[in-house]
Length: 279
Length: 332
Image (cartoon, each protein chain N blue to C red):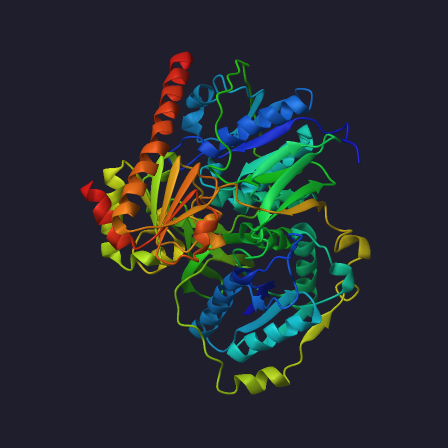
């Protein structure tokens, strides 16, 4: 069985710093593996453990050369190969162009894949679009919001999906793409020989040429969307902070709630007015 | 970059829930679409829906006085349950025939599964989870969305047609626009030949009564975080909420610690709410949380840590211990 694992390196969003001009300060911001991709890797490794040794996992990422460190870390955990899709021409890609690029790389390196596993979201863009876009490019089915797998054999997999209103169980046959949500598990430690394996492994590097894409298909040129304006989202609430005694704090809370809920009554009367009009 | 004359009108996907009603996000999108239509010289606002065969009678009722010009519907029994492959195929066929300039989809689980497949098949762009939609001076859709967990806003344009966007439930308000247009109902052929659907639903366990819970319409929400320490803290939170007619909610860390259910989680991977008053208790205010509640009309924060980020977005910040202040409040 062959599994393509798709991962992304993202800036650590819990630690964003801003310049005076409200642009993001990129220097000194640490890059991490997208947290949802850790769950994707975990699912791939669990599948590998549950079947037999005959499972090959290849991790794919699109990004700058330093992203190969992340691929080596995954190899130390039990992933077999790493593929870095890297080319200056890929810069500025939106999810449409990214889906096309990653799909082309998988087709080039692993055309006989059974499963593609992605994280549900990336914490930087949070579009949840790249996984389905890869599946669309390859013309295969997808299962999103995957929480865990129940059963797996050579032909199909039974999965649990966590949706807004409940838990859905689906059975799907290969080839198939999965987008994985977080699940609870113990973080993996590297294999005993993992670090050595990782340092010895050769990371395959692919350019646009290598995967048969023209410059106009990739990066900014190949992207139907573009950012016309970016600005910082500043709160419009006027923070007033009070450090008072317990008694005074409770009193303040009561007064503020009365003040705010008073305007709530106004809103309610507006609604009743509207309902009267509707009738 | 001028509008393309071949493409005109706005198409909205109307998702039918498991309980067979139209998801509320459709009405939120419809209101916004009518505003966009006005700026586009009154182009048609149309909808596409997949009904159960037994449900067609209710269709006219659901769209009554909604101002939808055309309702395209499909009632093939293969479409009873959502299928990525089938649903996207039919929407793609419809778009190729009717050429709308804008296609809007609610960012529900289903919408987020569907929209990228449609966008890829139509070779057009898609902007996810928009918080604002407008028409720019060139007649193009300007879609604004938060990135980096809500800290940066980006306004995105699309070179191709249709210009696609998804919007989360509860981001737009349902307005009071009344429109007595008589909708035209058009039955679509389900041309699914050669489409391989290899995903089969074998079970569904409901964890919420409906996709909508009390939080969606609550005027007052009282939310707890890790500062509430344990389930006892949430009991006190519930008591507090009951005393002021509010609903309780929780931050993601509190849900993951098992203090509260996932169904009341607010934030990036939970619900987006916009109550009249939001009271954040023992919540640090990480952007993953605030992105789901910062549109609340008023925010009150109670936190022991005077440096907590939540104070940056609150109207009133009370520095103090929830376990001291709330029992005192309840005595009043």
